[in-house]
Length: 505
Image 1 (cartoon, rainbow, N blue to C red):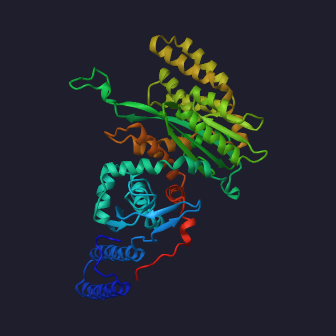
Image 2 (tube, rainbow, N blue to C red; image 1 turned 120 degrees about the vertical axis):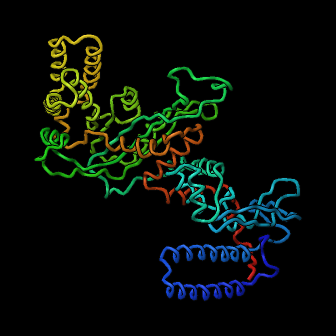
Image 3 (cartoon, rainbow, N blue to C red; image 1 turned 60 degrees about the vertical axis):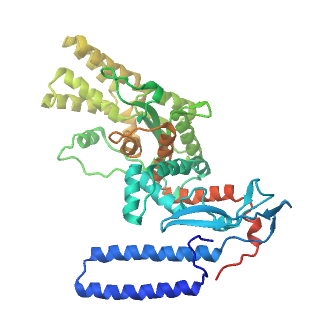
């Protein structure tokens, strides 16, 4: 029952009213055509009218369903008897057509105790929150791309009403509660669209956090160099497949330096990427490490997707913890290959070049080009030795000597993952463009906007929803979470379907 209903509701009356309105709109369109009204004005007018008609039809639907009077008692599947309580209860519902107030009958053992069944809510499968599922879906799709304050303004512009920032943030966290169950339920992607090689890659990225109040007492002043915010580590991982792409070292150098006579070649695209993102946090007093959580997710996906005899490539930067967790959580066999991202080798070569040649000079460019070619041809160890000898010959001292020693240590520590001649000949990917791009578009583009600061629950929720969106699973996730919530809110729904429902027609 709606509080805004007419004294007597008849479907025929609603249809008659809408027919008159449609006739009036046809007249308006004719007049607009005669007067040369702009398409923009016509489109805007029609959209507003459609929203108005939608509201009338939604009111009619709620009125037809009625207040949910299923008799004086309801018998549950376990034999328990619930009584219709004397007073109807009110709830609010906000849809894309606006806000509604419903009054409906409720059932329980007796007044003052827990309400166990609300027939209207159960029949309509209403959400737990005041916002309808469609409004939640739309608003949170906007929220994964824009600040909550901007989403509120956008809704106001499109629908004629807004939701508060607090409501949007709360809805975001509530929606993300279904993310874990959704990820657990995922099956293997279509095998026909998988590439030849399975690739696992991950990276870490800091998220700017709100400082706890106790850290910033009133009247305090930041010390020189102290930042207004701190960052909490987030991890993002991805499993995907890709076809083999055989190329030579010379071809790759020409591509990286964008030589005009570079051979034209289109690398194969990554197929069926699956992202996971998490924030290091505490849940129920237990520390949750983001990187561990992501590696466990990737491990499960590898087990789900890896075919017998398929090569698995682990591709990441030089962070030691990533390699350590790779050894702990991912398969290690004769068909697994560990590769250091080439884009973490190349900057070290440029850094070395600028120790001996001016930045931007042709000499520096040739220095890098020559050594990169040798690294790609399998001579990384000799390149490192050559850099050290050159440092001694040029008598580098102080900061320059320390920089050279540091970059040589990095390369030497990762030599076991720098057999690029073998990787190129086999056709394996050697750069982490997929995960570097994900760090940007999943984390940075939404989480690190100017002045933006996060609290742990909100940041974790946003990361989960951003990853689901990046996977292309937004609509599938929405359908799944509605099923989860409906099953939780209405455990007696199937049993009570046999109850006769008197529609108000």
